[in-house]
Length: 429
Image 1 (spheres, rainbow, N blue to C red):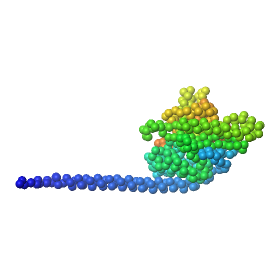
Image 2 (image 1 turned 180 degrees about the vertical axis):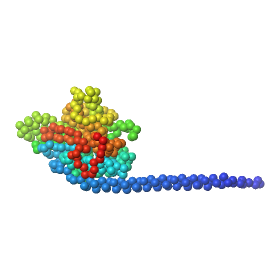
Image 3 (image 1 turned 45 degrees about the vertical axis):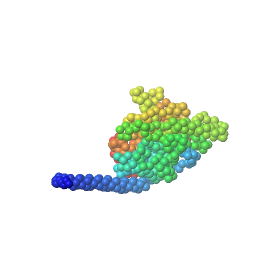
Image 4 (image 1 turned 90 degrees about the vertical axis):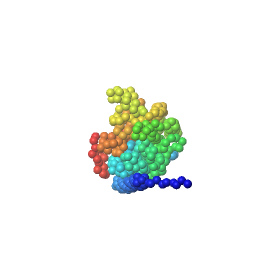
């Protein structure tokens, strides 16, 4: 029988298991430490977010109600409203308010709320229309992905001011990483009596495709506002690296065309019930209903119109009539063309379009008989350094007359007539 020999264990071999055990313990400690730091960070920022949000809610409660007229409004269908008046109707367009609702944006959120409240209090609009990006749930700038917080702040402000409002969704209102969907936000907005925002038809793309009519004492529609969801990003969009945007979808364009037809038929039906001389007078003055469109992402025709104007040494052309404002960044329109503008020209109803999206573009031009207007933005948050710039910040005032005509002008926030509740910041103009 061969006797087995046991080789002696060296000190290095004996120490190896101990070193391995030590490394595992060190790694475990590091991981525990990292997790602990993350938990402390999340808890701390969550507390700060809650404190900042509640602080802004309390500040909102200090704003006085506006002196806007009490409107007579009825809902005649899902997403469709009638405003009954024989007087001029004053509409304030706001855009790109960008309320972050997070721990990093609380101070800038208050500045935005302050600006909105002071302009509404001074202008006393009958209706406020927000053309997208009310919320801005980008964590790197807001410190949250909770798009409900910014939405609630604005809704609470408008309820405090006592002014009717509605909106169209922008690309930031419901980001891919947002906690709440469009339907979730619609449910939230439905709890506020002064919010007219509704889901709209289920058989077309988007949410918030809706109609608001101005109706006079003879039940004649003198003007219709059509709001459309211009959606968010195109399929080839790459966040941070490159931006490409969606547009208004074919079934929405078809719906728009049908809506215009139905509104005119409704007026024709009403005219048939009126005195012949009154009906003739209406037919001569307002042969068809004029409509204004409100949505977030500009049509490609915004770029076409400005290029034609600029190429003509910034002088009016056969197609373009300049009213006011500047182009200070590229027109960030849809990456693919659609048939929206062509359909607008075909129907002959829409004489004005109001959009947002490009925060420092402020121009308003007539292009082929359609007024294309950028709303003055509110944004303190999205563009780096924009809180210190003031030339683009404000609102757009649109006055609709009883005969269906309208006037439109941009109002800068830093005018003396806009008296703020909280200190107005110094900016570069």
